Length: 300
Image (cartoon, rainbow, N blue to C red):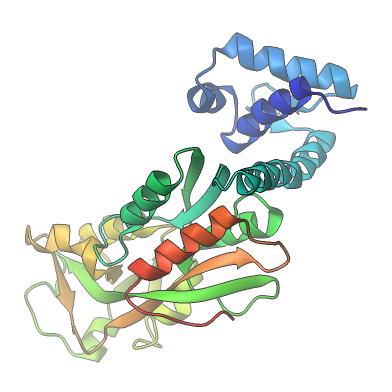
C-alpha cells in the first residue's frame, strides 16, 4: 500500500480517535462533525482492508490490528514533524509540531514559568505548533518511549535506560492536613503525624514517606488534584507542592504539618528519548526551559 496525502489525513483522525478514547473526544479535538470523523475512519479501513476499531456497549475499542496501526503511526508522525523541521532549517526558520508532555498542576509554580517558555518559543517561531499533554509522570514517560511525545517535563524518575534527563528545577513539598483533621491547629510530633492515615501518589510513595517509614497508607491519588481532595476531606494527610497548596492555606482550609523539618524536594527534569535525534525545535524548547528553571543539572 502506497501512502497518499489522504491516508495521512485519515491516520491523523484515527490517532485522535485513539488518543481521545472515541468519537466525541476526537470531534472536539479536531473540530469535525461525527460524520466527517466516521468518513475518514471508514476510508482508512477500506484502504487497509481490515477493521481498526469497534463501537458498542463497551464503548470505543481498538482491534488487535488497530492497535498495531496506531503504534506504527507514532514514528510516522514524528518523522513528518522532523521533515518539516528539516525543511524549515533550510529556510532558516523553525517549523513543525512539538509534542510536550507535562505533569499535572505545575501552572501555579511561579518558578517554573512554563507559560513563559511556550510564549518565547511561539514568538520566535510563528509557524511552530505546540501540542501540550498533561498527565501523570508514568504515563508521560511511556508516551516518550513509544514516540507519542517529544519532550517530557516531570519529576525525575529513577534511572531508566533510553531517557536523557536534565534536572532544571526544584519543587518543594510539605505535609498538609485539612481543617477538620485532628492535627489542624496543633504542633504534632513525628509519631503523632505518623499515626494518621496518609494519602500518597503511587509513583512518589518512597519519596513522600521518607520521614514516615511506618505510615499507614489509606488512599492512593493519581494526581495532585486528587491528593488535595483527600487532604481537604479531613480524613487523611499527605504531601503537596507548596505553590499548589497555597490556595487552600490562605483560606485556612489546609495547613502544613511539621514544616520545614519534614519538607521534601522534588527534582524536575526535561526528558527526551535518548535514541532519537533532537530537532531544532526541541532544542529551542529545552534551552528556554533551562533558562527559566530554578537550578541546573546534568543529563543522566
